[in-house]
Amino acid sequence: MLKKIKSWILPKEIDFFESLRQQSLMTTKIVDELADFYLTNPSKDSKKIFDLFDEEKIIRKSNLIELNSTFITPVDKEAISRAYVHLHWIVLSTKHLVVEINIYKIYKLKNYYRIFELLQEEMQALSAGFRLLDNKQFDKILEFVHQVINLDDLLIKEYAELLIRLFKEENMGKVLEHKEILSQMREISKQIHICSNQLEDIVFKMN
Picture 1: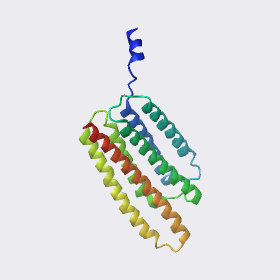
Picture 2: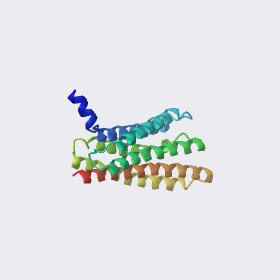
Picture 3: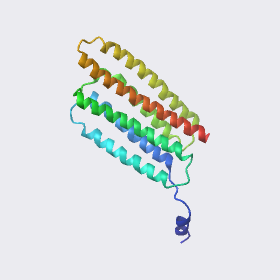
Picture 4: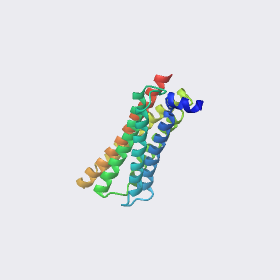
């Protein structure tokens, strides 16, 4: 009976760090599927990755509803909300890339394998950082944040080198289409970088 009374009086405790971990894992899964789809199994059927986009959207909406309904959070609600939002922006940028590729009908992107690898490595580092929030391993989290930033720098270098080779092509239509694809891949990396900054902000607020 006492337990029931407490449930009426005391606000529900929500593990927001677990929610962030789950959303970051879903985002990592999407980036991994993106790489697998275009590097190992390129085709016109992108239904699986669009299903993942829809699943992530549901997770994000549920997280925001929970955040809005509680007064007790481990760090200010705005910081958690920004992390949710920027994780979602990684997914949106990935979705925009798939939409562009479908319109251009360019499915074989093995020349860009290093970009895909770097995006995967960035997301793995970001998710590893979110996973450590609950244990308050702040120094280790910051190491993962710096890892994301370094990987983003490597991706920008790879992006520039690919552009140089692309600009030597004579088919201007091909050049413009591939330039847009590369720019959108760079945008995904940018969003991962920004999200790592939000993770860093949470660490600074807690430490």
